[in-house]
Length: 206
Image 1 (tube, helix red, strand yellow):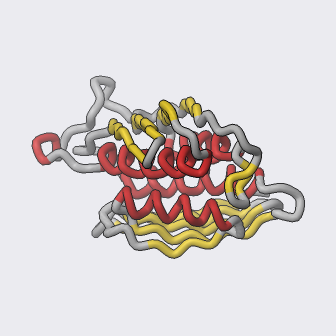
Image 2 (cartoon, rainbow, N blue to C red):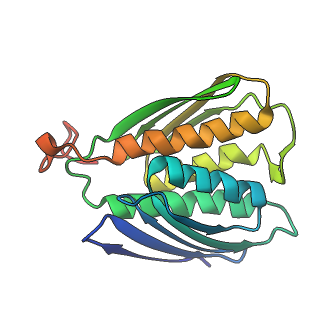
């Protein structure tokens, strides 16, 4: 059975998602207008670090407490974290009036170059090309990076495209992607004063 509760604070664009299943229990709070402060515990050390980078580069305040069946596999925890974070971002955005909606960023990290592009247009789609050649980076199963971002795209109802253009270090490839993702999402969530009362869509719905 899935239990999900959410609440939104209107003073700042902040939301909390409590997501509980038989496999995971996650509480995620995001403030889109924060300063990059974070408090994160997922049980997977490298994932904690990636989410810290996401928060810092996005300028989001992020609090995540997650427990899951890591004795079985990391998959449920990683995927559900993506979903919960996406839902929190969607809640915090509110009616989406005045936001840029789309954003992209090209992130160098030493010998690695990664590109992230995001559209908060209401339809989930995910393309992830990491070019990672190892099963693990730190203690994180690398194939699950795709599942995390796919979960985010579903939760936020967003297009998420992530591509490592080139690089040698598998650590750098994953890290550059999370940094680029945070900065691209920062642009997509940012307000455009000229469009403050307008919805960024010709359909009139996001």
